[in-house]
Length: 154
Ligand SMILES: [Zn+2]
Image 1 (cartoon, rainbow, N blue to C red):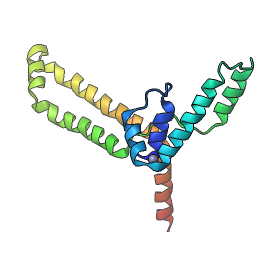
Image 2: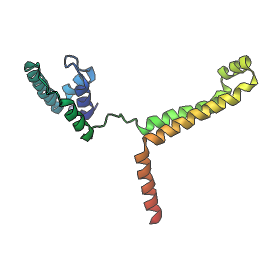
Image 3: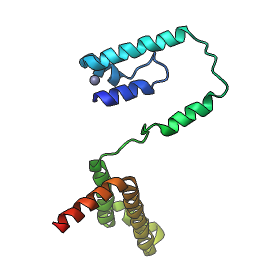
Image 4: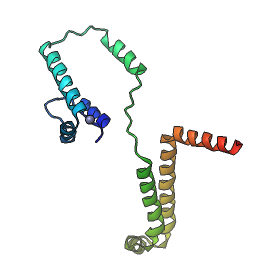
């Protein structure tokens, strides 16, 4: 676990009484994170001593406005290797499923007309998967396209 991930997981815990074991383990090895967590713990305890808070009634608008302006990303990025591995598993299942005992069993129960809808379903699955990959990696694909276009011009 790197420092950014450890601090993100620490800040995600609502109740500071329970800190994930992985974060505690990282803090044991990393002096910078250990100091930051100790500082944040002091700050949170100081805030709790001043509770209860009287929030102004129009605080929601200010918070929502600040949240819209912030550049915090909540989405987690799945590595390309994982995308390729899952895509490879789907493709290999398309290739290997005609040889499986399960398909033979399904043919026995539903007849020979089962293969075409099953192949269509697998084709739809890989198409949806490819569309999800493209949709979530538009910026990377655009950067790759720009790089290829620049290389072709030279
Ligand atoms: Zn660290």
